[in-house]
Length: 118
Image (cartoon, rainbow, N blue to C red; front, side):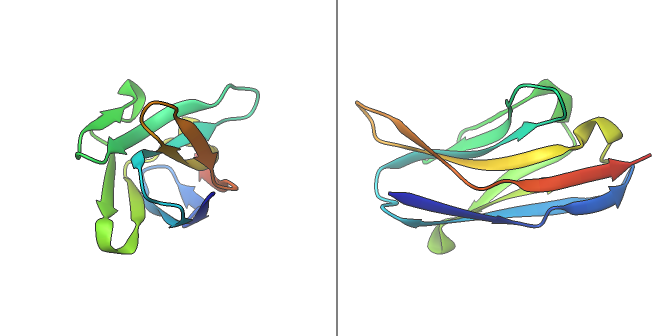
């Protein structure tokens, strides 16, 4: 099992910044990627940004140039730096870890609320 603990959500005004953190513990061996997804009110969960064990990143077009994913390998932690926040960024943000190569299993954090006021 992999445990993911998120922190850093909150309420911020449009144009502001927040940094989310996600600490992984447990069976972290063979984690091939970690990332952030979000689910806004009445919407499906969507990928925000992810990073592979090799350092490759994938991001949604809607956050390009505003959000940056990074990681601290020694701390088994990934971060999502969010700048120039918009009201449409309001959502519950979930940390994700993909573990395994031939058979991939996804693990999820409990979610952290990000609310951007206009």
